Length: 132
Image 1: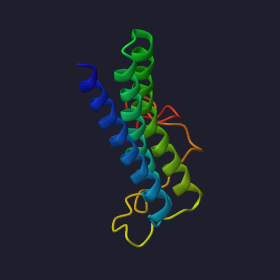
Image 2: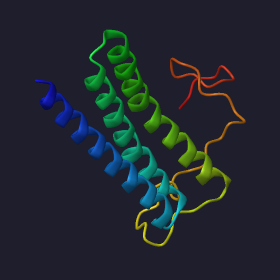
Image 3: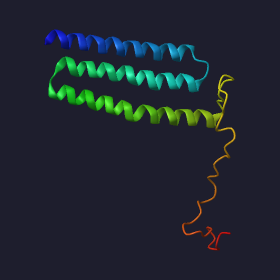
Image 4: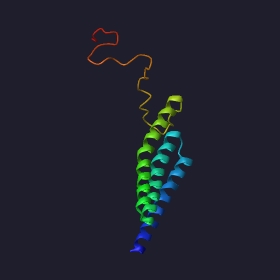
């Protein structure tokens, strides 16, 4: 039984290391900030998650397993959100996608107007007159 667990831990660590290596190569080789961010957030999250699961399987203690699972859940919840926020901020300050990106969906989107308040509920404009 212990030999099987050691094999599972080894496979998880090797898989996690390979995904982390792919993330590192993606950061170095991809042409723009958006593709690099995608590689780091997807492959890096999977690699670190597999390493944490390997730690949980290796220890088989409830407190370590609980912390490892909490770490995996934390990575899975925060990595996509932080990557999205970083990409949006990069685009807003002027970093445009490279030529390999065929569709720039944000280029055709109208800029967000933050100077005026949103329309009031119930079909009325902010001034109180009904909207037409």
